[in-house]
Length: 360
Image 1 (cartoon, rainbow, N blue to C red):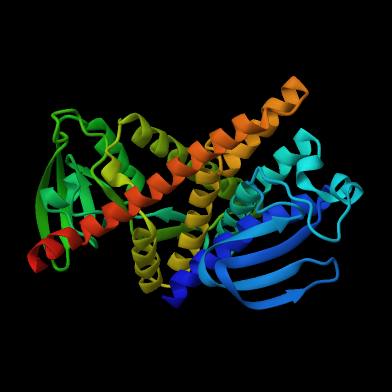
Image 2 (image 1 turned 90 degrees about the vertical axis):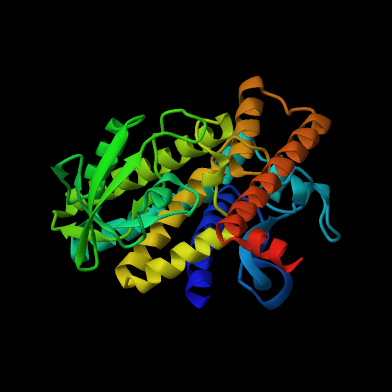
């Protein structure tokens, strides 16, 4: 649990620091920076007047700016002790649209920078990480599990071809969509043949089977190659996650692939058990995912704030406040719905509902 909170804490703090740094650079006064929500357990003000907090529920965090609930809020209140002139000078909502756009984008890009630094540091110390051919089966409901694959299996052949990297497996999965994927798997001291029918329950051709890489191997690279590769890995991870979320939204991929906080906990636990390097790499991966999710053009997420600011920048005037409030309320419903879906899938994968039915 402590390692899970550490993972979550690092990526959330990086994200919120991104907002805070860009806000300060644009003259916005940040009243508070909190890791967690709820009752404040610890607080201390710095020289610039920002109150740094650790709060009771460590599942997120926020930056509270002058007259604002948080960086994604559309509300503005003039607090006691401040004047209209103070608000004009230090409030995020009084800044130019391009400045508000940068503040909203600061969080996601801080997550990407964290990931790049982690991948770059690991590349310099251990070499450039590359996923090997040992797998994690992400759910008991997916094609991989139903075909007989299990977490910890090492795939040594796919469709008769030798594989040593996860990308080799991914290529064979992609080329086998709608067909039968034949795998040779090392499981402990045994070698087994596994046939995967690449067809979804509705009869459509499956493009994914529900596996992810478990381990890494490393290749020594130069300083410039390490930096370039780190940027490419971060970019590819971000793009893949954004594409995956759009596929879920359009129905191209089953919504059962959406995971929640329990899935993150399980992944953190498994990566920690695999060693320090694996855990640090998972921090970078989760950081990229958090950054990518927040770039989605959904109100209440940073992407929604970016879109609103961009529109106001182009048209040269603020959008109607009532319209913005409605849009952000709809976005909040969408985000809460996504969180509930992730939690539902997590509980279903744990067979919680089957257990509950048995109790009653």
